Length: 123
Image 1: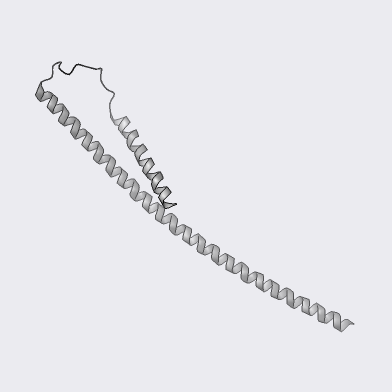
Image 2 (image 1 turned 180 degrees about the vertical axis):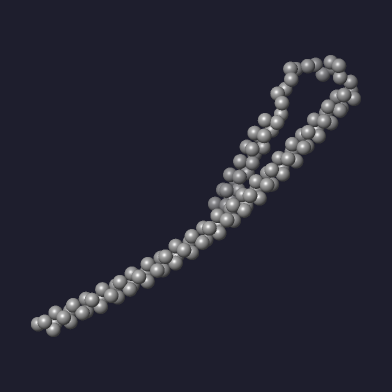
């Protein structure tokens, strides 16, 4: 169950990252030839800026993914603890039911014996 939760959280993380990337990336400008007005230095600068931006996005996505996984682990631990508590309470309730059922049976047996004695005395 915990593995399934972690898998779901991982899928959610990927979804969030892709959605944020699609919102943060502007639409591609109209296609322009590579040679129009750009020197080699400008192209290198633009490539460096693009690489830096990509690195920032990747680092941000990794931080967010780590945060989500941390929260998921906390929630999974809390869920496991809650399940253990619920199981312990259910076991205690079942033990109480068994005890009460045995008590009722014992009392029914005693009542049956009393009725039998009363019937024997009445004869």
